[in-house]
Length: 467
Ligand code: 8DG
Ligand code: MG
Image (cartoon, rainbow, N blue to C red; front, side):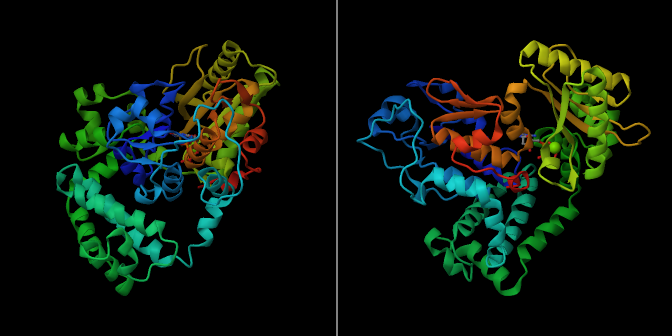
């Protein structure tokens, strides 16, 4: 069972955080791990067959009034990056089947509506499939894009004027409805099943479809341009390590520029090390890094690693591995062939980090550099280069190469879908490996293909993991 706090789903639209991990398995051998449940308003997702009696005796008292849905809702919400309308996904409790099975769920006869099969389809070719439909669904995409833009501006305004919550919710509902349509949008009448064929949303849909323009959005854009506070929010949120709350603190304090933050000694002292570095490297860290430069950084680290130990391997991960022309940062995995013991793994990462610091390549660090370190987050510069780039390194046991690669190649939506698929099938997937959910025994951690295969997937090319 998963618990998905509704407000977290509401935030999916800005792609900042879909918190499936944070609200993971609650029913664990019959014990309810209440502390994991973030909010009693959560939507309850039943991932294994469950009887009403079992539900009532475990979490029913707290969640009786909350929507209980099938995992297809999560699948479709992740695929669309939107909170889908709940009605068509309601869970009907299974009174016959026992739910406590120690075996991973077996695939039954093909049923295109089953969540696991839909996930397999989505993960194997979902991204390509969706893109292929874009032409035919151009009007749907056009309306969604305009509504998304309106939501973005309303969300900015929301910090200063709380009157827009219902508008944001209405636009989100409309987007969910449009994205769940299985045919091209031709008029607001198509949204009748969702009760959106009348009222403001219907008018906006008609206007966009008939004229290609959206006058409300134009007004909102003008309001955004006219109000400096909104622009400052956007500017401050681009500081590495700064989220909505801190950005709002800066705007409320009256800062107009990044320099204003630095000049307020008290405020500056209250910031985290990462935020301070984010301020220092504001321009550089907001720039995308060309693919060839990512490769140059990798080559540099590989040479330094070889100088320490020829068995110390460095692999590029992240968006680079998914074929991106530019990357936001440089993501590296480091392991030593045949080394799996944690203390040794940490020690080797430490040796490499120290060497990179001494050579002047690493110029700043946001994590403690010590013989117990398991990751490094900081900044680096190639010899003779002007620009500092963001660098993330994780040190892993060799035996976990496959699971770590899946995790660090991403993207995060691909990972979340994969973890959900694992859960539906009675497994638990993390960056450490694929485990049986029932007894936590390891199924596979080294071989990426085997992990995918166990979950019912053929090999998924990295470039097809941009979902
Ligand atoms: P970019 O740097 O070019 O912007 O894209 P990226 O390489 O895909 O993103 P990243 O922020 O560098 O993260 C690398 C991978 O880590 C990402 O593709 C998937 C994995 N990852 C998760 N969950 C999360 C998460 O919550 N935050 C981040 N930053 N990465 C995550 O699976
Ligand atoms: Mg990256």
